[in-house]
Picture (spheres, rainbow, N blue to C red):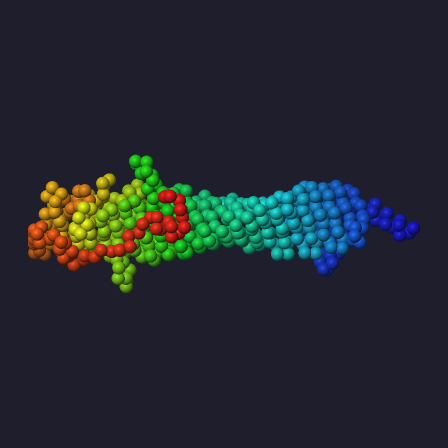
Length: 464
C-alpha cells in the first residue's frame, strides 16, 4: 500500500520529472499539463500532454504531446514541435528526440533557422553534439543572397558549410549553378560543384558546362577545369538564333568590370561561319573583344576560319559588334587563305607583317595588309579561270566580292625604297598546277571546329 501511495503521489505531482541519460550525459527533464505512466513490453513509458517542455542542457523542446521511453531515453514529439538551442530553432509537426545521442529527428516536414540560414525539407536530423543538420527530400537552404535546393544536404552550423548531393541548384543575383554535388561555404561565399555542372548568367545569356567548378563570389571569379564548354545564345536582327560555342581544358570567368573570360589549352571557338583553334583566348564580354596569341614555344599559331577563308597569325584581336564579327586584326606573320567555292584547288593567298580584315553583312569586305606583303590571287573572266597574279609590296588593300578577291591595290614604301612587283601567269601555266603556286607562308590547317562536334563531345544535345 505504501508503494502504491508513493506512485500515485509521483504521478499527481509528476508534471515535472528528470531522467539521467544512460550514457552519463546531462539529465533530461520534462514538464507538461498532465502525465500518465505505463509499462510497455517491460519498458517504462510516460506520456505528457499539454504545454510540454523537454530540457537537456541548453536544448529546449516544446510540443503539444510527448511520449518518453525511459529506458532508451527517447521521446516521441507531436504537435507544434519547437526545438531550440541558443539562436537555433527547429520547427515541425512531429518528431523524435534521442537523449543519449542528443539527436532531433523529423520526417513529416521540418524547418531549421540558425539566424544565418533557413533550411527546410521533408526529413531532417539535427546532431547537437556535432552542430550538424542532415536533411533530405525537397531540401531548400536560403539566406539573404542565395537559395540552394537539392535532394540531400549536410549543414555544418559552426563552419557555415553545406554539402549537397542530388539535383543541386544554387541561385544568387548573378548566377545559377546546378550540379550532381556541391560544397557551399557561406562565410567566404565559395562554391565547389562536381559532375554535370551548369552555370548560367542571365545578364549575358552565357551558360558554361563542365564536371568541376569553383566559384569565388567575393572575388567574382569562377574556374571550370574539367570538360568546360561555354554557350552564348543571341538573336540576329533577322530573328535567327546565333550561338557562340567555346570549348577548352580550362575556363576562367571574371564577373568584375572587365567581364573577362579566359579559355586555356585546346581552345575551340565556333559562331556562325566563324571558327577558331588556339591554345589561349581572352574574351572581354563587355566590349566585345577576343584576344588570342601564340605562346612561347608553340609551333602552331592561332588559326581562324570564316566561311571559305582561313586566317592565322602570332597575335589576333577579334572585334565584335552586337556579338557579330566586325573586324580581325593580326600582328606578326599574318596569313589569309581563301578557297574558291567553284574551283577547289585555287587558293587566294595573302601574307604580311600585320593585317586587318573588315566584315559586313555579306562576309569579308576588305583587308588591309602592312609590311612585306606577298600575295597570289586568281583572276576570272565571266566566271571562267584566267590565270593568276603573284605580287609583292609594302602595303596592300584587297577588296572582296562573292567571297573572293575582286580588286587589289598595292603600294610601295618610299622610306624603305621598296617597289611594287606584280607578275601574271596565264591560264595554260596554271591549270592543273595550282598548288605549285604558293607563297612561303602557305599552309592549309586541318581540324576546323564544328559546333555539333563540340556539343556532342560535351554530351549537350540541345539542337543549338
